[in-house]
Length: 470
Ligand SMILES: Nc1ncnc2c1ncn2[C@@H]1O[C@H](COP(=O)(O)OP(=O)(O)OP(=O)(O)O)[C@@H](O)[C@H]1O
Ligand SMILES: [Mg+2]
Image (cartoon, rainbow, N blue to C red; front, side):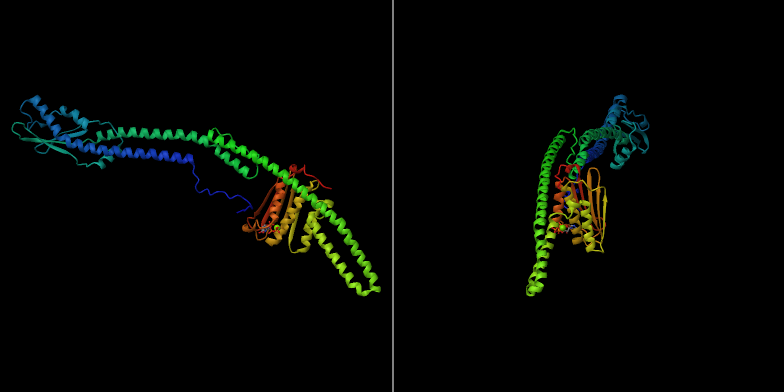
């Protein structure tokens, strides 16, 4: 995994909620639950109704039957041999309403009439199966048929549930529930589609945020139709514009500071070189002259002269060191490429076992002084860091110049970054500041395999206004 120094930590995405999907699922589950509960209630009511009907139907139907026979045949009501002639017309209305079947048996327990009343139209078989499982299949009501004057039992009237009738009733009620459930689901879809359309720009918004995160402050938010989202995106764009202005101002300021600093350093380096360098050279020459004279005239004074010479050359060495820190050696005189060649060669001389590859693609002339110094310092600090912290065996320095950008990459195969220490010193901070002042992008990342990679991208046209020195 690549680790960028200063990279913002993204919040965990574990609690992410997809609003549209959550709404859709919840409403669907709700509709199905309502449908299920309603179905259970319908079946339960059917069960209670069947039980009540069967309990009540027996005596009522017998009574109706007796009344009918009395009305049509006088006092002789049921005869033993003509039981099958009984007309069930009188009970058909109420039996149909109750949804029962009636069976008439004679005293020999033979079925003489078996007729079902109610709605016999077809319903899904699963409903009748479910209903049969739910109710007691042997549920029935039995009432005796007897003559009214002598009270002799002539047969039995048995009533039992008409499953088809009840199934149809249930099916009708369930159809209503299904239509309601489908309506809820349809409504859900009707809500889902516009909500999804309204929230669609979120992908684009996220893309824009990611562009902004990567430093592209010219990126602007889409214009969503949803009023709330639109207000947020407009606010965001306003914020980005402000940030862009502030950063541009900061960049100008930083560039100015960089220019002034480099100018000051250049001036100091020149003064030190011209004034102190000349004086030290003169002291060195004088002490050489004195030592040759004192050799014959006053040899005892020779150690003092030797000490002056040694001190002078120490000061000259320190001065050289100071000068190279103030101003990259030979940068003004010989240009960036030669200075970098010299820098790489000096490290190579000191560490012959280390493999340093230095590649340049494109001509490095004509860059302004700030860019030259920045590139030089990045290479210098990255080389130093790699050798100081990474102990690599190979370092590849690559500089690519295109028409509008310079890409600098320093790759080493050392032990890699220790994230806790990455902000420990001033080197990385300095590189980052220099690149930011030129409006560029700086990254220091842990390589996938081993070592560290420093990447700096500097836009050329952004710095053409930079002051150029001698
Ligand atoms: N090439 C590298 N390999 C391994 N670690 C590195 C490399 N470059 C930078 N680092 C890590 O980043 C840290 C910060 O580097 P930086 O140059 O800012 O500070 P420094 O080198 O410790 O001190 P100085 O201020 O002298 O430069 C280092 O301490 C080191 O842990
Ligand atoms: Mg350093």
